[in-house]
Length: 189
Length: 278
Figure 1: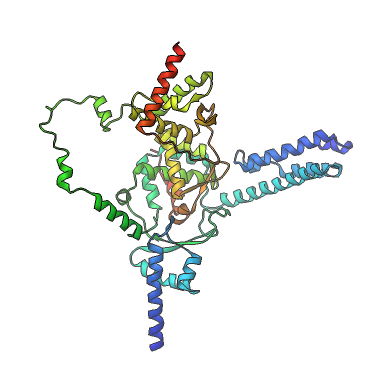
Figure 2: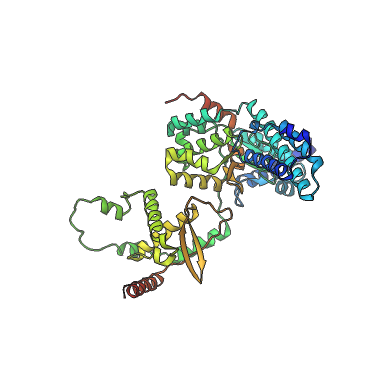
């Protein structure tokens, strides 16, 4: 009984430490890499993350792993060199809440357009094409600025030949199946 | 082609051209210019097989290997397209494009948030940020002193604001940023019809503010690939691009403009103008 209690307290401390590592930003990117978690939490870090996930479930958050094999949008491409764990919202937020988080409706619509277009082109589309389709709604210069912002924040990546692909943040934050189904079901206005 | 090959040894130049055509087609498919299924892989492989016994030079063998490698990539693309089309993510690109054009901005934003699970993260106080805050606090003047600076006596009587006044105070722009850049690009193209334009000459305006604004606008033109900066004999020359050309490896180039620098440029420009008139 005593041993069990000790083991529970031990994991409790490590769960706290894992929460700190995942929730507080330390570098350029949010979350923590798997080697970092292994070094700070020990070999059983995955078990600790499961416990943390159970706790976060109560507040509508979850621990997600972004890696080359995870996510539906990878299309067999290695986009991130190392696996990274992040905490994301389990449910979704309303448009009003998104605006309160600092997002403009324009930017959200542009993100939906850019991601859906890249997905429809099997995960890779030329930057010019994406800018063209965005330009029809937001103007040429704004389209260029928006694509720059999306590549900077990690929603889209750009390779040397000017092709855009879905980057780590899209794979972490977007449920592409829901997005594509919603677009397919949306009625023409 | 197959019939011609059966008769005897093919002409080497023709054979090379055919293999190069295969390589180019494969590369175009890889760049998403064509549908992967537009290439008849079986026919292409037969072509390579027919030519293979006649290759004598090392470079021809290398070309053959390259073509085979590119064909294998096209096959992989065909495979991934089949997998993709059978998945629930598949949507006809043309249909989707129409839909994206037709849907309103608000509806698109609503669709995104339905499938969006943003990352939760917190930003915390760090030692450097605390030091920075203390330094700022120490140099910050008391609020009474700061307010005193704005006491300018009785205010002017109220009057109507024209659109030019609103533009000056930054409430409403007379022309959009896009229009300003387009105008600047046209100006650059006109000036560069006889050759490269000197960077300093081009951005130097009637006052300091205008000069800084023009420098910022030129930086946007260069970043977006509508113009390029060339360095020659210690000076910077500005040239417009015929077509938009993005730099694959962009280089940052800081240009420092102070009032003193601007005054020197202006003097220099006046001297140049007077010598030209003489």
